[in-house]
Image 1 (cartoon, rainbow, N blue to C red):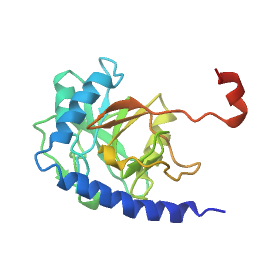
Image 2 (cartoon, rainbow, N blue to C red):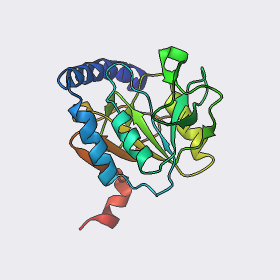
Image 3 (spheres, rainbow, N blue to C red):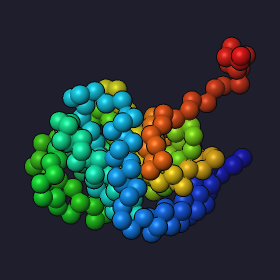
Length: 205
């Protein structure tokens, strides 16, 4: 039987290097601006949709130009508070707000900032595939958060990544939540839904 945990560890090393190279090759941040434009044109966002974003660290693709543009369009924006071993909560963010240093050195809104409940999450990642399988850092924070939010309301999940972070297959198990969309500097696309073998005859042309 395949050891999924080991497969994830192996892919994590490869994906981290791919992202590092992509980030190094984009010193002017052109990918972030392209992601902004593709997301604004492609993502299915209701006028009042609450957007959960992230504050980029390391070589994560910078989502801040997109967050600023969505804020200007009137979307409430939230950034995550990380709680060790628990689902994250999202708290209101505005472009002029001062952030504080939190768990794992991640900048986040002050804990007194009002909590918001996102309708869509914009999520960083290490690797993704065409079916929306996402590889993160191994802590399970995003999966716990998605599960908690989807227990309360519908939630759209969009991965934000460099195009080179796509792999043919990303190992996953029953605890991993798939993405609905992926946005890269090359475009925004809804992920494919893999059909079960016994259903193929009903959809064959």
